[in-house]
Image (cartoon, rainbow, N blue to C red; front, side, top):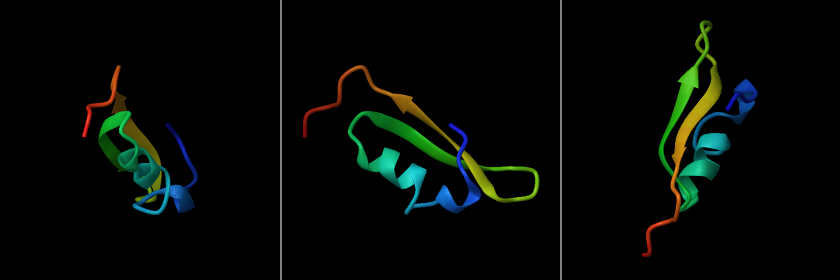
Amino acid sequence: MEHGDEQGGADGVPGVLSASPWFTDVEDHRDLSGRPRFTTAKRQAKPEAN
């Protein structure tokens, strides 16, 4: 998903998705000017039990 460059990193969208049991393989990506601008993740069908 695309997001503002101030919403990247551990305190932003990637951090929120990483903290959720529903998402795996969360990665923050940079645009051509080097700013964090979009995040990818895989959604699990069912979260794994802890």
